[in-house]
Length: 292
Ligand SMILES: NC(=O)c1ccc[n+]([C@@H]2O[C@H](COP(=O)([O-])OP(=O)(O)OC[C@H]3O[C@@H](n4cnc5c(N)ncnc54)[C@H](OP(=O)(O)O)[C@@H]3O)[C@@H](O)[C@H]2O)c1
Image (cartoon, rainbow, N blue to C red; front, side, top):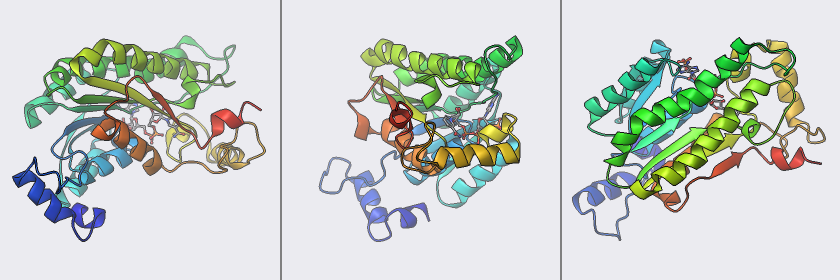
């Protein structure tokens, strides 16, 4: 089913041929992640869910992690029923022992690790003079410390994966630009961006590329989970779509999670083989529009 929806006429045939004759370039493999083992955090919802589906469609073996067992099981059933390969590993990004276990279980189950997508994230807002240490620690523990912890445990396996591994961190435009009312989130994403750039330098000798995507407003559960009421969320989305508003997306709309997933796919695949240390904005032009 994945093959058919990807390329109804020729994909299955091309893949079969390129598995049998991998060096025959006139039959290039149509799947950009065929047999790559990819661990995706926050795969139970939003951008992570869209990424897991896309990766499976592109031939990746997906290790899906998050805390919501039911959502992960449903994703895994969907992928496996469609001819892909996936398994759920439940764990909390903010818990070091969980992170270690998720990485080790992935490697044990699938025999290695080629791609790490550090997508899990939380957003609890608040202005600098209003938030407490709990707010700061909450954002930092998932969005920055959790990213580093997964990276730390994944590195030994990425190093032995054949010299072409990729890490993609899901950051935010909030890591690149200051916004009022969400200091802890902005700080956590700025830390994520710096981890990305430092790690790209340290890990380049091992052929491990490290990049981030930095989305603007994406239509997911993130803001409501962080405490926005339905009403406030509607206002936030409306404002993000008003092209005359300084905080709007220049394209005049918010992103769908699938549009971010496509950028994560690009940075994970060999199509971006010469890209490392990049913080790629996926924000409908918001960053530039906001500067006027
Ligand atoms: N939506 C936007 O406008 C936007 C914009 C820029 C950047 N981003 C970034 O995109 C990423 C994905 O967010 P989303 O928009 O897709 O939001 P979402 O739908 O709320 O998904 C967040 C994911 O993170 C996981 N997660 C949160 N805390 C976790 C923890 N302690 N341990 C394990 N998993 C945890 C959740 O899994 P469980 O519930 O299963 O634990 C869920 O799968 C985040 O890093 C976010 O900061 C989003």
